[in-house]
Image 1 (cartoon, rainbow, N blue to C red):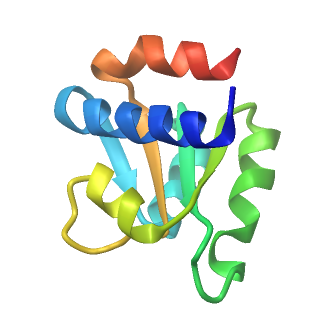
Image 2: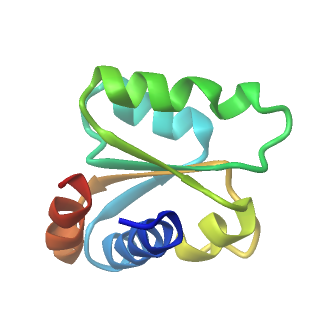
Length: 107
């Protein structure tokens, strides 16, 4: 799957999960969701400063066998999560109607 296409699918999954499931926003919440084994999908922003804030997320996600996708900007991620501001990371903890999109992304 092309990178941009994958990012759009992930953002779509976040929007759907926000409406029909449950999401966690922010690097700390996402880290907690991963550590507790609740995260089904993780998205983190590429333009976070300093990068150390989200640097551990892809490693932790891999350890927990969760798909982690880098999104170009915090603004895109924040908008998908229904925020008026950017966010460093988002985790889907209950898929809701986004279950099929997440399955498709994992392939």
